[in-house]
Length: 204
Image (cartoon, rainbow, N blue to C red; front, side, top):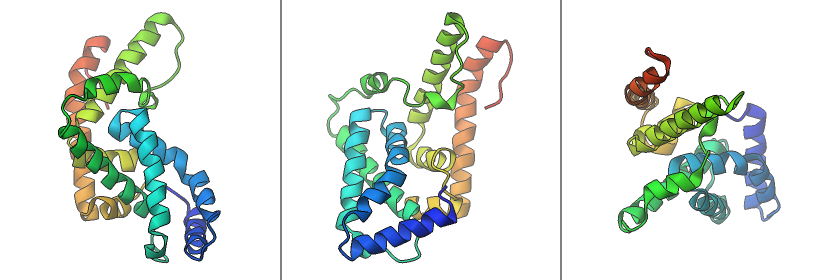
């Protein structure tokens, strides 16, 4: 999550942007574009779509610059815009079934590889690590949208439960419940597969 100082800077830059100082958008993008892009990759499992929606998110930040409330969390506002774009993209995909989501996951490569260690001391362990990373990517992608979004915003973007609640439109307590359920579902789906590798149960 952004520090208080960073959130204050975001607020100042949004005020600059609303007053007609367009270069302020570049400062906001410098701080947030990288993390936003990776959030969108994790949601969409497709780097091309992620890049497109990251750009569109900042277009909408600019278009709605005068609507940002002073003192509000810019991070929550930014991820609300991005998450709504993700929902729109999933709706588009559902109307275009010829698009292969599995092919997109393959094309995305190691987008979620950081969920597991990157150390690869040997070819055999490297293969096992990639298989594990692929299993985690697929399990995260298969989560229901509400659980996946809450988990990603918490684990990767560092938003508080209250901020996530702003993004997804529910209470902080409901966010906590969604994250718990997401972890439980991931554990259930991955435990058996990882146990095969280790000869016993594994903690996720």
